[in-house]
Amino acid sequence: MQNVKLTDAVYYVGADDKTIDLFEGQYVVPEGISYNSYVIMDEKIAVMDTVDRRATDEWFKNLEQVLSGKEPDYLVVLHMEPDHAANIESFLNKYKNAKIVANPKTFNMIPQFFEHLDLEGRKVIVNEGDELVLGQHSLTFVMAPMVHWPEVMVAYEKKEKILFSADAFGKFGALDVDDEWDCEARRYYINIVGKYGAQVQTLLKKAASLDIQKIFPLHGPMLTENLGYYINKYDIWSSYRPEDKGIFIAYASVYGNTKKVAEKLKELLEAKGAPKVAIADLARDDMAEAIEDAFRYDRLVLASVTYDGGLFPCMENFIAHLKSKNYQNRRIAFIENGSWAPVAAKKMKAEMENLKNLTFLNNTVSIKSAMKDADIAQLKALADELLSE
Image 1 (tube, rainbow, N blue to C red):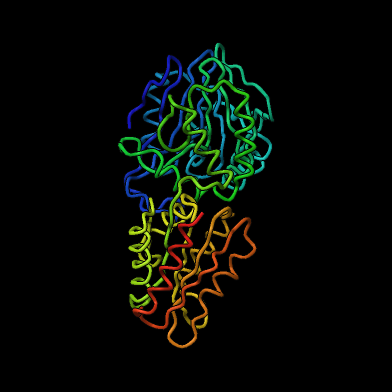
Image 2 (cartoon, rainbow, N blue to C red; image 1 turned 45 degrees about the vertical axis):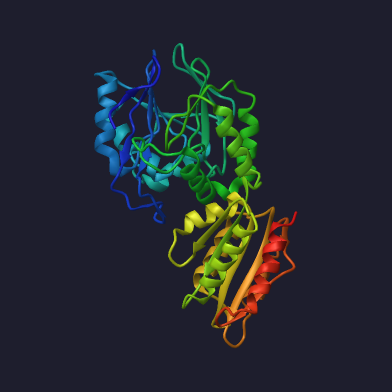
């Protein structure tokens, strides 16, 4: 993506990455990812973050076009994750007079990535509420620890009323992809930041005191209208409230018998008028999307075959992800299968008992090997309980 003039003084100089296969080494990104970086042109010139090393050449090209021979005064580092900070040393080596603006936690972290980088005389240390005046524009810094690393901060530019939001309000997908914001922003948030809902809530409370008219994140599109919509989504996600009424069935099946049970339950629920039933094969479908759906809906059904006296590995992995992201405030049901000693329901419940505000349904469906006509009654009873208020 070429540099883009966003306002009279603010430019986009980031880059789309369409060649990446896994973001953060684990999340599939079929539509790529954007590494966002911005420049504020004023009496003093501030560059807002760098980009991943995969986009170094494009970033410097875009940056040089905007600078048009001028020298930047500051590099503002909101977040030290390598997809944003990989080019700090290259930038400072290229622009010898530029200073780096960061908070104490960031400066403690920089040597971990750049062992031989000499910052003597080039540090501008900022803390909560500090202001960096550029001329007509100025940046006020707000600390946002654990959104989603401990050194993270955001910056508010009061003339343009822009919140440079670091990873907050980001999404998967390159900027030239025309898709719905919610789906890939939700998958991004739940899987990457989801553990830190309390910290996101703290940031939202701080942001509420600012007159924000634009949000410029480090991934995904710049948000310039209907900001209340996006902020409300973040409030829902970070407070672990269900976003939609619906039932998500996540199953783990070896030979397809547990899959048939899960699909039969979906059929029964839809026949009984369930507004939304989503289903996922945990062995084959995107795990990050399954986690997203578990958080999106207010009811969850876990269906697993018994495997080596425990759970099938993909179900074990799924539950571990839910626990690591502080899953809570949902109604949960269990389906188990086993040929001689079905114990999957007991194992799944034991894994989830210590999570907050989960309600376990009374009806647990237990199948011996393959679904039979008599098992349908169990599934109907579970469907009725899932649909009851």
